[in-house]
Image (tube, rainbow, N blue to C red; front, side, top):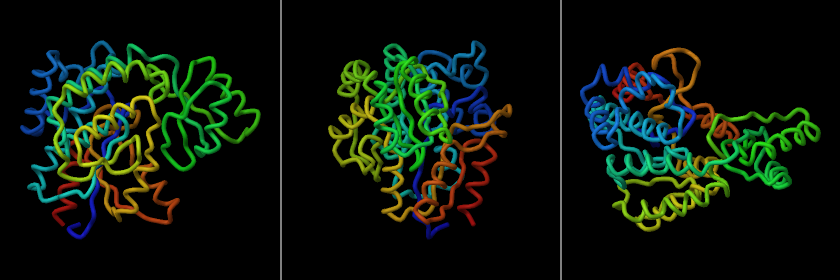
Length: 325
């Protein structure tokens, strides 16, 4: 794959699961170093939370965000070790929380600083969260006026024909009923979140989070990092990156825009780090969170893509072998 233009991608909330990272910790000293550092920085046992989740708390936003960031960076560092650092991406991007992992990958944020930021971000989002979120099988132009009618707001543009909206529970119920009446073939799927993230409900959280952003050191990116807020590449200016992360909290995740930027930059291979989906137990049973979204978006554009999973010990070894070949 030496001739490929590579982009590193990192998923967001919804890709966490009990047992996440346990195989990496067992198999790789590099991963153990990442998890041990996370425990020290956070001051609680993130290893036990991620590997065992005895109190069923990994789904709480304040825990999900540092757990995912740690898993994604552990996968990234193991991948770099297995490939000898030979794979150099042209871009990095993450969905919502994943944008912080992308910034770590680009050298903008130190891992310890990123951990502190996302722990605080998760606390504020959980504390000030209200309502919930619905995934609609609609394009954003159709979804937005429907959401507006019910005091809801577009929260994420995941696919050309999938838009997530957020709002109060009663308003989301009314929106879903309205959709069923107007467009009975379309679906409204409730998501398991602690609030209406990336909507006006997060304005208070963002205002409080600004203090943490301003106090955190940011460096100039070593590679292009895509902004969820703009859909384009972050400016090579730390202050600008801070403001985009501030606005990201209460504006839609423009993932379609990010992928369109990747397409325009002729990215041909996407390597996905961390998280996982699937009802099976254990890391080996999981599949990548963003793969389907990436493939569908590129297919809509008439393109094919090469997606490489790097989400557990098995797929990391396979990914390293693929790039070695």
